[in-house]
Amino acid sequence: LDSLTDREQILAALVAPGKLVEHLPHVVLDPSQAVQIRNGIPLELDHGSSSLVGYDQQGCMVAMLQRVEAAQSSYRSLRVFQQAAENNQPISINKMHSPES
Image (tube, rainbow, N blue to C red; front, top):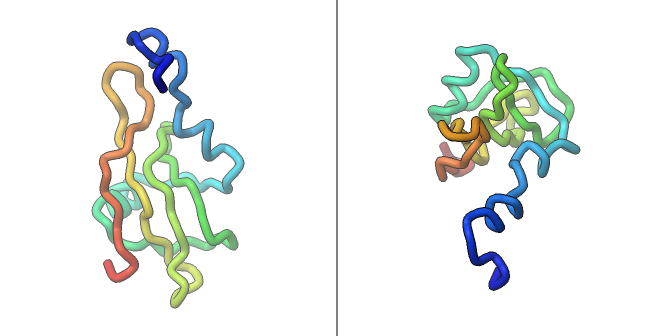
């Protein structure tokens, strides 16, 4: 980190969140599902994986999802993302939901 002294070096060192999770299974959320998960409301999804990356229909990352253990088809958000205006990359809005929510 000490070698990152100017804006160009920092920007060149950043990795897009989508690149970091491209190995995980994903699901495309319809508009109502995207709103639901952004508001911390669990989704009912027919998927076998315990963790998913949710994208909207435009291909933008919406949230990291984790299956609720008590309900095999219910997923809750671990982290919710919004698009940065300047570069159209997803950024975290630090909205983590506890298992109780």
